[in-house]
Length: 150
Image (tube, rainbow, N blue to C red):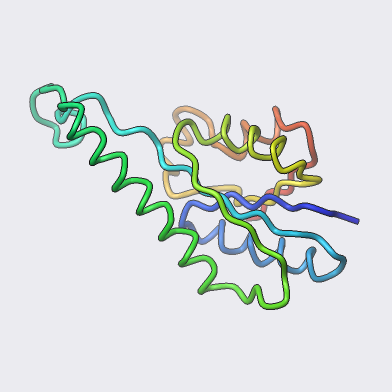
């Protein structure tokens, strides 16, 4: 039924549930799982991080912060792989940096995903209520089917 299943991960409980659903779907056929996570861009100034004054980061500080954010994103994938039995499945991984909803849709196009399986709520529930959840945005803009898992 599905050949490629994209599973965006953010470290949340809902994302782990979504990976379980995706693994079940993949086992039911011959689908490949593509796990991805998105490290957002670091803020432009330290005040956004600490609540203090808006002192700009140097380019070296921004690069170091971006690298740390990517490293944390890789850990999200590792934790998900540890939490869900993916034995016997073909699994690929990617870490992108930027705006999650946009990059999830881009990745779905890139890997020619038949379906995106993602959690209905991520780690930032308050932000999602204010700006709209990533899953909501993806479900309205994806060019493939989207399954949201609660």
